[in-house]
Length: 272
Length: 272
Image (cartoon, rainbow over all chains, first blue to last red):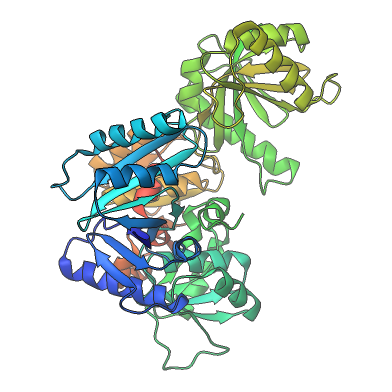
Protein backbone atom coordinates (compact mmCIF):
# COMPACT_ATOMS: atom_id res chain seq x y z
CA UNK A 1 0.00 0.00 0.00
CA UNK A 2 1.58 3.24 -1.21
CA UNK A 3 0.84 6.80 -0.16
CA UNK A 4 0.10 9.30 -2.92
CA UNK A 5 -1.84 12.45 -3.87
CA UNK A 6 -4.66 12.34 -6.45
CA UNK A 7 -5.03 15.56 -8.43
CA UNK A 8 -8.27 16.24 -10.33
CA UNK A 9 -8.82 18.72 -13.14
CA UNK A 10 -11.74 19.74 -15.30
CA UNK A 11 -11.53 18.98 -18.95
CA UNK A 12 -14.67 20.72 -20.14
CA UNK A 13 -14.02 22.15 -23.57
CA UNK A 14 -10.71 20.37 -23.90
CA UNK A 15 -11.82 17.96 -26.54
CA UNK A 16 -8.74 17.12 -28.59
CA UNK A 17 -5.98 14.83 -27.38
CA UNK A 18 -3.42 17.43 -28.36
CA UNK A 19 -4.96 20.24 -26.25
CA UNK A 20 -5.28 17.89 -23.31
CA UNK A 21 -1.68 16.74 -23.60
CA UNK A 22 -0.50 20.36 -23.66
CA UNK A 23 -2.71 21.30 -20.73
CA UNK A 24 -1.30 18.45 -18.63
CA UNK A 25 2.29 19.32 -19.58
CA UNK A 26 1.91 22.95 -18.49
CA UNK A 27 0.05 21.93 -15.33
CA UNK A 28 2.87 19.60 -14.30
CA UNK A 29 5.48 22.25 -15.15
CA UNK A 30 3.64 24.75 -12.93
CA UNK A 31 3.41 22.20 -10.10
CA UNK A 32 7.14 21.54 -10.33
CA UNK A 33 7.81 25.28 -10.21
CA UNK A 34 6.54 25.24 -6.62
CA UNK A 35 7.35 21.72 -5.49
CA UNK A 36 10.55 19.94 -6.55
CA UNK A 37 9.42 16.56 -7.94
CA UNK A 38 11.12 13.98 -10.15
CA UNK A 39 9.51 12.47 -13.27
CA UNK A 40 9.07 9.17 -11.38
CA UNK A 41 7.02 10.85 -8.65
CA UNK A 42 4.45 12.36 -11.05
CA UNK A 43 2.26 10.11 -13.22
CA UNK A 44 -0.76 10.89 -15.45
CA UNK A 45 -3.49 8.22 -15.42
CA UNK A 46 -7.02 8.54 -16.82
CA UNK A 47 -7.75 12.25 -16.23
CA UNK A 48 -5.92 12.15 -12.93
CA UNK A 49 -2.41 13.16 -11.95
CA UNK A 50 -0.83 11.02 -9.23
CA UNK A 51 2.07 12.20 -7.10
CA UNK A 52 3.81 9.51 -5.05
CA UNK A 53 5.06 10.81 -1.71
CA UNK A 54 4.88 9.77 1.94
CA UNK A 55 4.20 13.35 3.05
CA UNK A 56 0.96 13.25 1.08
CA UNK A 57 -1.25 15.40 3.29
CA UNK A 58 0.97 18.49 3.33
CA UNK A 59 1.62 18.12 -0.38
CA UNK A 60 -2.07 17.71 -1.28
CA UNK A 61 -2.95 20.87 0.63
CA UNK A 62 -0.23 22.88 -1.08
CA UNK A 63 -0.58 21.57 -4.62
CA UNK A 64 -4.39 21.93 -4.69
CA UNK A 65 -3.94 25.70 -5.09
CA UNK A 66 -2.20 25.47 -8.47
CA UNK A 67 -4.57 26.97 -11.06
CA UNK A 68 -6.20 24.38 -13.30
CA UNK A 69 -6.72 21.83 -10.52
CA UNK A 70 -10.19 21.36 -9.07
CA UNK A 71 -9.10 19.30 -6.05
CA UNK A 72 -6.42 17.15 -4.43
CA UNK A 73 -6.71 14.24 -1.99
CA UNK A 74 -4.00 12.56 0.07
CA UNK A 75 -4.70 8.87 -0.65
CA UNK A 76 -3.66 5.25 -0.27
CA UNK A 77 -3.03 3.26 -3.46
CA UNK A 78 -3.90 -0.42 -3.01
CA UNK A 79 -4.70 -3.64 -4.82
CA UNK A 80 -8.45 -3.54 -5.57
CA UNK A 81 -9.26 -6.41 -3.22
CA UNK A 82 -12.60 -6.12 -1.43
CA UNK A 83 -11.31 -7.27 1.98
CA UNK A 84 -8.38 -4.86 1.76
CA UNK A 85 -10.73 -2.01 0.75
CA UNK A 86 -12.93 -2.73 3.79
CA UNK A 87 -9.95 -2.69 6.18
CA UNK A 88 -8.60 0.51 4.67
CA UNK A 89 -12.03 2.19 4.92
CA UNK A 90 -12.12 1.31 8.61
CA UNK A 91 -8.70 2.92 9.03
CA UNK A 92 -9.94 6.06 7.23
CA UNK A 93 -13.11 6.37 9.30
CA UNK A 94 -12.66 9.27 11.72
CA UNK A 95 -15.80 10.20 13.67
CA UNK A 96 -19.56 10.71 13.70
CA UNK A 97 -21.83 9.88 10.79
CA UNK A 98 -20.21 8.82 7.53
CA UNK A 99 -20.74 7.94 3.89
CA UNK A 100 -18.83 5.95 1.29
CA UNK A 101 -18.63 7.35 -2.24
CA UNK A 102 -17.17 5.22 -5.00
CA UNK A 103 -16.17 6.25 -8.52
CA UNK A 104 -15.48 3.32 -10.79
CA UNK A 105 -13.54 3.89 -14.04
CA UNK A 106 -12.25 0.26 -14.13
CA UNK A 107 -15.33 -1.54 -15.37
CA UNK A 108 -13.90 -5.02 -14.68
CA UNK A 109 -14.05 -4.51 -10.92
CA UNK A 110 -16.62 -7.13 -9.74
CA UNK A 111 -18.93 -4.75 -7.83
CA UNK A 112 -20.75 -1.71 -9.14
CA UNK A 113 -20.21 1.62 -7.33
CA UNK A 114 -23.47 1.38 -5.35
CA UNK A 115 -22.75 -2.23 -4.36
CA UNK A 116 -19.27 -1.38 -3.12
CA UNK A 117 -20.66 1.59 -1.14
CA UNK A 118 -23.10 -0.74 0.52
CA UNK A 119 -20.61 -3.56 1.28
CA UNK A 120 -17.99 -1.20 2.73
CA UNK A 121 -20.62 0.89 4.56
CA UNK A 122 -22.12 -2.19 6.24
CA UNK A 123 -18.67 -3.31 7.37
CA UNK A 124 -17.99 0.05 9.06
CA UNK A 125 -21.40 0.06 10.75
CA UNK A 126 -20.72 -3.49 12.02
CA UNK A 127 -17.30 -2.54 13.42
CA UNK A 128 -17.98 0.94 14.80
CA UNK A 129 -21.77 1.25 15.16
CA UNK A 130 -21.49 4.58 13.30
CA UNK A 131 -24.50 6.00 11.45
CA UNK A 132 -24.60 6.31 7.66
CA UNK A 133 -25.71 9.79 6.56
CA UNK A 134 -25.43 10.63 2.88
CA UNK A 135 -26.16 14.34 3.32
CA UNK A 136 -24.92 15.47 6.73
CA UNK A 137 -21.91 13.16 7.10
CA UNK A 138 -18.96 13.96 9.36
CA UNK A 139 -16.57 11.59 7.56
CA UNK A 140 -16.55 11.06 3.79
CA UNK A 141 -14.63 8.00 2.60
CA UNK A 142 -13.83 8.21 -1.10
CA UNK A 143 -12.89 5.25 -3.28
CA UNK A 144 -11.71 5.68 -6.86
CA UNK A 145 -11.15 2.61 -9.01
CA UNK A 146 -8.84 3.23 -11.96
CA UNK A 147 -5.39 2.26 -13.20
CA UNK A 148 -6.17 -1.32 -11.95
CA UNK A 149 -5.83 0.01 -8.41
CA UNK A 150 -8.08 1.34 -5.67
CA UNK A 151 -7.38 4.85 -4.36
CA UNK A 152 -8.87 5.64 -0.96
CA UNK A 153 -9.04 8.90 0.99
CA UNK A 154 -11.08 10.84 3.53
CA UNK A 155 -10.06 14.36 2.66
CA UNK A 156 -10.52 16.61 -0.36
CA UNK A 157 -8.72 19.94 -0.66
CA UNK A 158 -10.60 22.13 -3.14
CA UNK A 159 -8.64 23.93 -5.85
CA UNK A 160 -9.54 26.92 -8.01
CA UNK A 161 -10.16 25.08 -11.30
CA UNK A 162 -9.73 27.12 -14.45
CA UNK A 163 -6.80 26.69 -16.81
CA UNK A 164 -3.10 26.31 -15.97
CA UNK A 165 -1.32 29.67 -16.07
CA UNK A 166 0.74 29.97 -19.23
CA UNK A 167 -1.54 27.89 -21.42
CA UNK A 168 -3.00 31.05 -23.02
CA UNK A 169 0.06 33.30 -23.29
CA UNK A 170 1.37 36.28 -21.32
CA UNK A 171 -0.61 39.36 -20.28
CA UNK A 172 0.66 42.64 -18.83
CA UNK A 173 -0.86 43.36 -15.42
CA UNK A 174 -0.83 46.92 -14.13
CA UNK A 175 -0.63 46.66 -10.36
CA UNK A 176 -1.91 49.93 -8.93
CA UNK A 177 -4.50 48.82 -6.34
CA UNK A 178 -5.68 45.87 -4.25
CA UNK A 179 -8.28 45.29 -6.95
CA UNK A 180 -5.62 44.96 -9.63
CA UNK A 181 -4.20 41.97 -7.70
CA UNK A 182 -7.61 40.29 -7.98
CA UNK A 183 -7.87 41.14 -11.68
CA UNK A 184 -4.43 39.57 -12.21
CA UNK A 185 -5.44 36.40 -10.36
CA UNK A 186 -8.59 36.10 -12.47
CA UNK A 187 -6.64 36.32 -15.69
CA UNK A 188 -4.01 33.83 -14.46
CA UNK A 189 -6.85 31.48 -13.58
CA UNK A 190 -8.07 31.79 -17.19
CA UNK A 191 -4.68 30.55 -18.37
CA UNK A 192 -2.36 33.55 -18.69
CA UNK A 193 1.09 34.16 -17.32
CA UNK A 194 1.60 37.67 -15.98
CA UNK A 195 4.23 40.27 -16.59
CA UNK A 196 3.63 42.95 -13.93
CA UNK A 197 4.44 46.64 -13.68
CA UNK A 198 3.39 49.22 -11.11
CA UNK A 199 3.74 48.86 -7.38
CA UNK A 200 6.32 46.48 -5.96
CA UNK A 201 4.19 46.20 -2.79
CA UNK A 202 1.22 44.79 -4.70
CA UNK A 203 3.52 42.52 -6.67
CA UNK A 204 4.89 41.03 -3.46
CA UNK A 205 1.35 40.39 -2.30
CA UNK A 206 0.37 38.76 -5.61
CA UNK A 207 3.49 36.61 -5.45
CA UNK A 208 2.60 35.51 -1.94
CA UNK A 209 -0.90 34.43 -3.04
CA UNK A 210 0.19 32.98 -6.40
CA UNK A 211 0.88 29.24 -6.53
CA UNK A 212 0.34 28.85 -10.20
CA UNK A 213 3.38 29.54 -12.29
CA UNK A 214 6.23 31.99 -12.78
CA UNK A 215 5.26 35.68 -12.78
CA UNK A 216 7.59 38.57 -13.58
CA UNK A 217 7.97 42.17 -12.44
CA UNK A 218 9.51 45.07 -14.41
CA UNK A 219 10.27 48.57 -13.19
CA UNK A 220 9.92 49.82 -16.74
CA UNK A 221 8.77 48.26 -19.98
CA UNK A 222 10.96 48.15 -23.05
CA UNK A 223 10.02 47.37 -26.63
CA UNK A 224 10.99 43.74 -26.38
CA UNK A 225 8.40 42.82 -23.71
CA UNK A 226 5.79 40.51 -25.18
CA UNK A 227 2.16 40.53 -24.06
CA UNK A 228 -1.07 39.98 -25.96
CA UNK A 229 -3.35 41.93 -23.60
CA UNK A 230 -3.29 44.38 -20.67
CA UNK A 231 -5.10 43.63 -17.40
CA UNK A 232 -6.39 46.34 -15.06
CA UNK A 233 -8.31 46.27 -11.81
CA UNK A 234 -10.75 49.05 -12.66
CA UNK A 235 -14.47 48.63 -12.05
CA UNK A 236 -17.59 49.59 -13.95
CA UNK A 237 -17.78 52.91 -12.11
CA UNK A 238 -14.37 53.89 -13.54
CA UNK A 239 -15.64 53.63 -17.12
CA UNK A 240 -14.80 57.27 -17.89
CA UNK A 241 -11.08 56.52 -17.81
CA UNK A 242 -11.37 53.53 -20.16
CA UNK A 243 -10.97 55.56 -23.39
CA UNK A 244 -7.55 56.75 -22.19
CA UNK A 245 -6.40 53.16 -21.64
CA UNK A 246 -7.73 52.31 -25.09
CA UNK A 247 -5.56 55.02 -26.65
CA UNK A 248 -2.48 54.09 -24.63
CA UNK A 249 -2.14 50.41 -25.54
CA UNK A 250 -2.11 48.71 -28.92
CA UNK A 251 -3.37 45.41 -27.50
CA UNK A 252 -6.81 44.77 -25.93
CA UNK A 253 -7.37 45.94 -22.34
CA UNK A 254 -9.16 43.58 -19.94
CA UNK A 255 -11.16 44.79 -16.93
CA UNK A 256 -12.17 41.47 -15.35
CA UNK A 257 -13.84 43.18 -12.38
CA UNK A 258 -16.54 45.03 -14.34
CA UNK A 259 -19.00 42.13 -14.14
CA UNK A 260 -18.36 40.73 -10.67
CA UNK A 261 -18.45 41.59 -6.99
CA UNK A 262 -14.98 42.03 -5.48
CA UNK A 263 -16.18 40.11 -2.42
CA UNK A 264 -17.14 37.10 -4.60
CA UNK A 265 -13.66 37.07 -6.13
CA UNK A 266 -11.97 37.34 -2.74
CA UNK A 267 -14.09 34.43 -1.54
CA UNK A 268 -13.15 32.40 -4.62
CA UNK A 269 -9.44 32.84 -3.91
CA UNK A 270 -9.78 32.38 -0.12
CA UNK A 271 -8.72 35.97 0.54
CA UNK A 272 -11.34 36.62 3.22
CA UNK B 1 -49.90 38.18 13.65
CA UNK B 2 -49.39 39.36 10.05
CA UNK B 3 -47.83 37.51 7.15
CA UNK B 4 -45.09 39.32 5.24
CA UNK B 5 -41.88 38.93 3.24
CA UNK B 6 -38.53 40.20 4.57
CA UNK B 7 -36.14 41.33 1.85
CA UNK B 8 -32.44 41.68 2.63
CA UNK B 9 -29.84 43.62 0.65
CA UNK B 10 -26.15 44.31 1.01
CA UNK B 11 -25.10 47.83 1.63
CA UNK B 12 -21.36 47.43 1.38
CA UNK B 13 -19.92 50.54 -0.20
CA UNK B 14 -23.18 52.45 0.08
CA UNK B 15 -22.11 54.80 2.77
CA UNK B 16 -24.11 57.98 2.31
CA UNK B 17 -27.79 58.29 3.17
CA UNK B 18 -28.45 59.74 -0.27
CA UNK B 19 -26.96 56.78 -2.17
CA UNK B 20 -28.84 54.36 0.04
CA UNK B 21 -32.12 56.20 -0.45
CA UNK B 22 -31.65 56.12 -4.21
CA UNK B 23 -30.67 52.44 -4.17
CA UNK B 24 -33.82 51.55 -2.24
CA UNK B 25 -36.02 53.61 -4.52
CA UNK B 26 -34.73 51.89 -7.67
CA UNK B 27 -34.93 48.49 -5.99
CA UNK B 28 -38.59 49.01 -5.11
CA UNK B 29 -39.33 50.32 -8.61
CA UNK B 30 -37.77 47.19 -10.10
CA UNK B 31 -39.76 44.96 -7.74
CA UNK B 32 -42.97 46.71 -8.73
CA UNK B 33 -42.10 46.23 -12.39
CA UNK B 34 -42.58 42.50 -11.89
CA UNK B 35 -45.10 42.36 -9.05
CA UNK B 36 -47.98 44.85 -8.78
CA UNK B 37 -47.80 46.25 -5.24
CA UNK B 38 -49.27 49.32 -3.58
CA UNK B 39 -47.26 51.79 -1.51
CA UNK B 40 -48.97 50.46 1.63
CA UNK B 41 -47.78 46.93 0.96
CA UNK B 42 -44.07 47.87 0.71
CA UNK B 43 -42.26 49.39 3.70
CA UNK B 44 -38.56 50.14 4.30
CA UNK B 45 -37.37 49.52 7.88
CA UNK B 46 -33.78 49.40 9.14
CA UNK B 47 -31.97 47.96 6.09
CA UNK B 48 -34.87 45.64 5.35
CA UNK B 49 -37.77 45.93 2.94
CA UNK B 50 -41.04 44.43 4.17
CA UNK B 51 -43.84 43.39 1.84
CA UNK B 52 -47.17 42.65 3.50
CA UNK B 53 -49.08 39.88 1.75
CA UNK B 54 -50.85 36.66 2.71
CA UNK B 55 -49.34 34.79 -0.23
CA UNK B 56 -45.91 35.37 1.26
CA UNK B 57 -44.19 32.13 0.24
CA UNK B 58 -44.79 32.44 -3.52
CA UNK B 59 -43.93 36.12 -3.41
CA UNK B 60 -40.69 35.59 -1.45
CA UNK B 61 -39.54 32.99 -3.94
CA UNK B 62 -40.24 35.24 -6.91
CA UNK B 63 -39.00 38.55 -5.54
CA UNK B 64 -35.73 37.10 -4.22
CA UNK B 65 -34.44 37.00 -7.82
CA UNK B 66 -34.54 40.77 -8.31
CA UNK B 67 -30.92 41.96 -8.61
CA UNK B 68 -29.69 43.81 -5.55
CA UNK B 69 -31.43 41.51 -3.06
CA UNK B 70 -29.38 38.97 -1.17
CA UNK B 71 -32.33 36.97 0.18
CA UNK B 72 -36.05 36.89 0.96
CA UNK B 73 -37.96 35.05 3.68
CA UNK B 74 -41.71 34.51 4.02
CA UNK B 75 -42.28 35.49 7.66
CA UNK B 76 -44.71 36.16 10.50
CA UNK B 77 -44.67 39.63 12.04
CA UNK B 78 -45.58 39.52 15.72
CA UNK B 79 -45.44 41.41 19.00
CA UNK B 80 -42.03 40.65 20.53
CA UNK B 81 -43.45 38.68 23.44
CA UNK B 82 -41.34 35.73 24.57
CA UNK B 83 -44.27 33.32 25.03
CA UNK B 84 -45.64 34.24 21.61
CA UNK B 85 -42.18 33.77 20.05
CA UNK B 86 -41.92 30.30 21.62
CA UNK B 87 -45.35 29.24 20.27
CA UNK B 88 -44.56 30.59 16.81
CA UNK B 89 -41.21 28.79 16.76
CA UNK B 90 -43.01 25.54 17.55
CA UNK B 91 -45.36 26.18 14.63
CA UNK B 92 -42.35 26.82 12.35
CA UNK B 93 -40.50 23.69 13.42
CA UNK B 94 -40.74 21.16 10.57
CA UNK B 95 -38.62 18.04 11.08
CA UNK B 96 -35.35 16.48 12.22
CA UNK B 97 -32.61 18.40 13.96
CA UNK B 98 -32.97 22.16 14.25
CA UNK B 99 -31.38 25.42 15.31
CA UNK B 100 -32.64 28.85 16.32
CA UNK B 101 -30.79 31.89 15.02
CA UNK B 102 -31.67 35.33 16.33
CA UNK B 103 -30.61 38.73 15.02
CA UNK B 104 -31.39 41.56 17.38
CA UNK B 105 -31.42 45.15 16.09
CA UNK B 106 -33.85 46.35 18.80
CA UNK B 107 -31.52 46.61 21.75
CA UNK B 108 -34.35 47.12 24.28
CA UNK B 109 -35.57 43.54 23.85
CA UNK B 110 -35.00 41.96 27.32
CA UNK B 111 -32.95 38.93 26.13
CA UNK B 112 -29.73 38.91 24.17
CA UNK B 113 -29.63 36.90 20.91
CA UNK B 114 -27.87 33.90 22.50
CA UNK B 115 -30.27 33.89 25.44
CA UNK B 116 -33.33 33.95 23.18
CA UNK B 117 -31.85 31.11 21.07
CA UNK B 118 -31.45 29.06 24.20
CA UNK B 119 -34.92 29.81 25.68
CA UNK B 120 -36.74 29.07 22.41
CA UNK B 121 -34.54 26.06 21.61
CA UNK B 122 -35.21 24.48 25.04
CA UNK B 123 -38.94 24.96 24.55
CA UNK B 124 -38.89 23.11 21.21
CA UNK B 125 -36.78 20.29 22.66
CA UNK B 126 -39.25 19.98 25.57
CA UNK B 127 -42.27 19.86 23.23
CA UNK B 128 -40.91 17.74 20.36
CA UNK B 129 -37.84 15.94 21.69
CA UNK B 130 -36.00 17.15 18.58
CA UNK B 131 -32.20 17.45 18.60
CA UNK B 132 -30.42 20.81 18.40
CA UNK B 133 -27.69 20.79 15.75
CA UNK B 134 -26.04 24.11 14.91
CA UNK B 135 -24.18 22.78 11.87
CA UNK B 136 -26.19 19.94 10.28
CA UNK B 137 -29.73 21.17 11.07
CA UNK B 138 -32.76 20.10 9.04
CA UNK B 139 -34.89 23.07 10.19
CA UNK B 140 -33.56 26.58 10.70
CA UNK B 141 -35.83 28.90 12.64
CA UNK B 142 -34.86 32.54 12.17
CA UNK B 143 -35.88 35.39 14.47
CA UNK B 144 -35.18 39.02 13.61
CA UNK B 145 -35.94 41.71 16.17
CA UNK B 146 -36.39 45.19 14.64
CA UNK B 147 -39.10 47.78 14.08
CA UNK B 148 -40.36 46.94 17.62
CA UNK B 149 -41.59 43.64 16.24
CA UNK B 150 -40.37 40.05 15.97
CA UNK B 151 -40.10 38.54 12.48
CA UNK B 152 -39.99 34.75 12.37
CA UNK B 153 -39.39 32.36 9.47
CA UNK B 154 -38.01 28.95 8.56
CA UNK B 155 -37.10 29.52 4.95
CA UNK B 156 -34.59 31.71 3.14
CA UNK B 157 -34.63 32.10 -0.64
CA UNK B 158 -31.20 33.28 -1.78
CA UNK B 159 -30.97 36.17 -4.22
CA UNK B 160 -28.14 37.29 -6.49
CA UNK B 161 -27.00 40.35 -4.53
CA UNK B 162 -25.23 43.03 -6.52
CA UNK B 163 -26.81 46.38 -7.34
CA UNK B 164 -30.34 47.10 -8.59
CA UNK B 165 -30.43 47.31 -12.39
CA UNK B 166 -30.67 50.93 -13.49
CA UNK B 167 -28.71 52.37 -10.60
CA UNK B 168 -25.60 52.74 -12.80
CA UNK B 169 -27.10 53.79 -16.14
CA UNK B 170 -27.83 52.01 -19.40
CA UNK B 171 -25.44 49.79 -21.36
CA UNK B 172 -25.78 48.43 -24.89
CA UNK B 173 -25.71 44.62 -24.94
CA UNK B 174 -24.87 42.87 -28.20
CA UNK B 175 -26.74 39.57 -28.09
CA UNK B 176 -25.01 37.24 -30.54
CA UNK B 177 -24.42 34.07 -28.47
CA UNK B 178 -25.50 32.21 -25.34
CA UNK B 179 -22.45 33.74 -23.66
CA UNK B 180 -23.64 37.25 -24.47
CA UNK B 181 -26.77 36.56 -22.39
CA UNK B 182 -24.52 35.76 -19.42
CA UNK B 183 -22.42 38.87 -20.02
CA UNK B 184 -25.63 40.95 -20.05
CA UNK B 185 -26.81 39.41 -16.78
CA UNK B 186 -23.45 40.15 -15.14
CA UNK B 187 -23.62 43.81 -16.12
CA UNK B 188 -27.27 44.13 -15.01
CA UNK B 189 -26.23 42.61 -11.69
CA UNK B 190 -23.60 45.36 -11.39
CA UNK B 191 -26.38 47.95 -11.70
CA UNK B 192 -26.95 48.66 -15.41
CA UNK B 193 -30.12 48.64 -17.43
CA UNK B 194 -29.71 47.02 -20.84
CA UNK B 195 -30.59 48.16 -24.30
CA UNK B 196 -30.17 45.08 -26.50
CA UNK B 197 -29.48 44.57 -30.19
CA UNK B 198 -28.71 41.40 -32.12
CA UNK B 199 -30.69 38.18 -32.01
CA UNK B 200 -34.34 38.32 -30.97
CA UNK B 201 -34.04 34.65 -29.88
CA UNK B 202 -31.35 35.46 -27.30
CA UNK B 203 -33.30 38.52 -26.18
CA UNK B 204 -36.36 36.38 -25.47
CA UNK B 205 -34.19 34.07 -23.41
CA UNK B 206 -32.65 36.96 -21.47
CA UNK B 207 -36.11 38.37 -20.85
CA UNK B 208 -37.27 35.02 -19.53
CA UNK B 209 -34.36 34.86 -17.04
CA UNK B 210 -34.43 38.55 -16.13
CA UNK B 211 -36.42 39.57 -13.06
CA UNK B 212 -34.58 42.74 -12.43
CA UNK B 213 -35.91 45.70 -14.33
CA UNK B 214 -37.09 46.85 -17.73
CA UNK B 215 -34.83 45.86 -20.65
CA UNK B 216 -35.27 47.01 -24.24
CA UNK B 217 -34.64 45.55 -27.68
CA UNK B 218 -33.94 47.44 -30.91
CA UNK B 219 -33.70 46.04 -34.42
CA UNK B 220 -31.44 48.93 -35.36
CA UNK B 221 -29.77 51.67 -33.40
CA UNK B 222 -30.33 55.32 -34.17
CA UNK B 223 -28.33 58.32 -33.03
CA UNK B 224 -30.63 59.09 -30.15
CA UNK B 225 -30.01 55.85 -28.27
CA UNK B 226 -28.14 56.52 -25.05
CA UNK B 227 -25.65 54.08 -23.54
CA UNK B 228 -22.43 54.65 -21.63
CA UNK B 229 -20.79 51.32 -22.46
CA UNK B 230 -21.10 48.27 -24.74
CA UNK B 231 -21.29 44.72 -23.35
CA UNK B 232 -20.16 41.67 -25.32
CA UNK B 233 -20.01 37.96 -24.46
CA UNK B 234 -16.56 37.33 -25.93
CA UNK B 235 -13.96 35.41 -24.00
CA UNK B 236 -10.23 35.75 -23.51
CA UNK B 237 -9.55 33.45 -26.46
CA UNK B 238 -11.35 35.92 -28.79
CA UNK B 239 -8.91 38.71 -27.98
CA UNK B 240 -7.86 39.12 -31.60
CA UNK B 241 -11.24 40.62 -32.50
CA UNK B 242 -11.16 43.14 -29.63
CA UNK B 243 -9.31 45.90 -31.58
CA UNK B 244 -12.16 45.95 -34.13
CA UNK B 245 -14.74 46.49 -31.38
CA UNK B 246 -12.52 49.23 -29.99
CA UNK B 247 -12.59 51.05 -33.33
CA UNK B 248 -16.32 50.57 -33.83
CA UNK B 249 -17.65 52.13 -30.62
CA UNK B 250 -16.90 55.49 -29.04
CA UNK B 251 -17.77 54.26 -25.53
CA UNK B 252 -15.87 51.61 -23.51
CA UNK B 253 -16.44 47.95 -24.41
CA UNK B 254 -16.93 45.46 -21.54
CA UNK B 255 -16.09 41.77 -21.83
CA UNK B 256 -17.23 40.49 -18.43
CA UNK B 257 -16.45 36.86 -19.30
CA UNK B 258 -12.69 37.28 -19.81
CA UNK B 259 -11.90 36.62 -16.16
CA UNK B 260 -14.42 33.95 -15.20
CA UNK B 261 -15.58 30.45 -16.01
CA UNK B 262 -18.87 30.34 -17.90
CA UNK B 263 -19.93 27.43 -15.70
CA UNK B 264 -19.39 29.53 -12.53
CA UNK B 265 -21.61 32.28 -13.94
CA UNK B 266 -24.32 29.81 -14.96
CA UNK B 267 -24.22 28.39 -11.44
CA UNK B 268 -24.49 31.87 -9.95
CA UNK B 269 -27.65 32.62 -11.94
CA UNK B 270 -29.16 29.12 -11.42
CA UNK B 271 -28.89 28.33 -15.13
CA UNK B 272 -27.64 24.76 -14.65
